[in-house]
Length: 118
Image 1 (cartoon, helix red, strand yellow):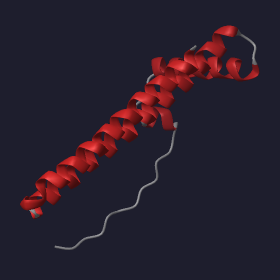
Image 2 (cartoon, rainbow, N blue to C red):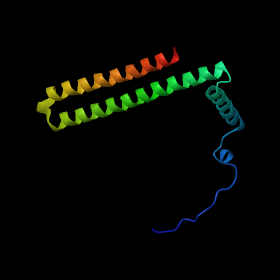
Image 3 (cartoon, helix red, strand yellow):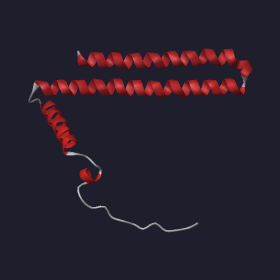
Image 4 (cartoon, helix red, strand yellow):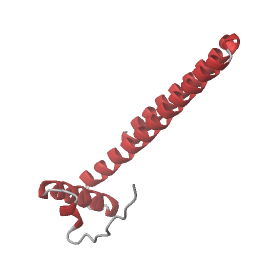
């Protein structure tokens, strides 16, 4: 089978095309206002929002990165055990050390977020 797809042009408001409602736009505007106040120092509430946002980003990226690293380490370790079952004990020890380091990194990211909020 072969064929050609017709090209088309989309016009109009991108937020309406994507299906965003006015409620979502209101929430985005309030977040934008809070962040603007926080950056320019007009209100203490805005600074608190910025502090909590920074803590959320720090813990979120730290937990995501360590979770992905731990999953990758486990997958590679199990793959190595499947290829060479006789080296199971050596691979398991190294895999568990890597998992503990990933868990330590996750804990440190949550601790850093706690320090940011204090």
